[in-house]
Length: 256
Figure 1 (cartoon, rainbow, N blue to C red):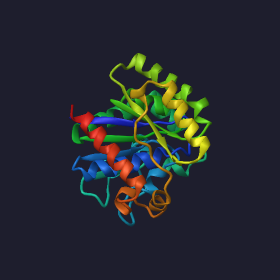
Figure 2 (cartoon, one colour; figure 1 turned 180 degrees about the vertical axis):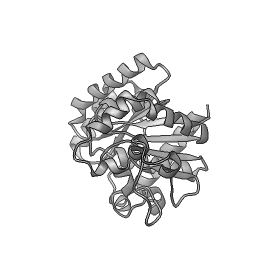
Figure 3 (cartoon, rainbow, N blue to C red; figure 1 turned 60 degrees about the vertical axis):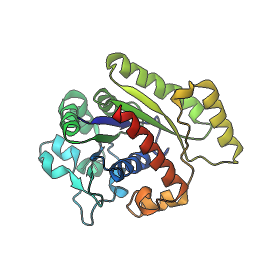
């Protein structure tokens, strides 16, 4: 039986979806049967997950509202071991309240994730920013959680919020493990970035912050714009290498 890894962040624009997509692809490159599930109504996974040309755009929201069966919302990619479940038609809606309510009040998300766990080695869940009802529901159904943080001074304010929220979920679901905080968009030589890293490493338990960082990389951004994970499009890029090494580290943990 596989494990479910939720990717969560307090705010958007920190590399959450980029991390979900590249980790998923890196796991698949290692021969792990991987499913990326997008439950964020923004639906950004579809833009960078190596989906086949002309792919369908329906997804979890359409399964949730009963308009599509589960088999129709699991899509193939360019990698044999990687499948993707987009969030679906909810991205076209101005109001996401019904989608949020269905997830918060129903049990379809945990049931779907449990079914995916039985068929996959790893399920990577891309959640909405913040710790609203969707993210909390996903965390309660997950085995592990990873927190990407853009390496900028603002994270010194948002980090305690996300950690308190995760701890609150863990108090009700003790099976959930925090794999760690991942510093993203790191720029060596930029004083504000280096001070932020130093502060976090000095004030949080050593095991809570990954030793490796994800450097700011034009190749990673360009790959996403081209509809591919950077680990496939530019595997030798430092950003891609960081994600590949992170996947190797997490795969070792999953195997224990």
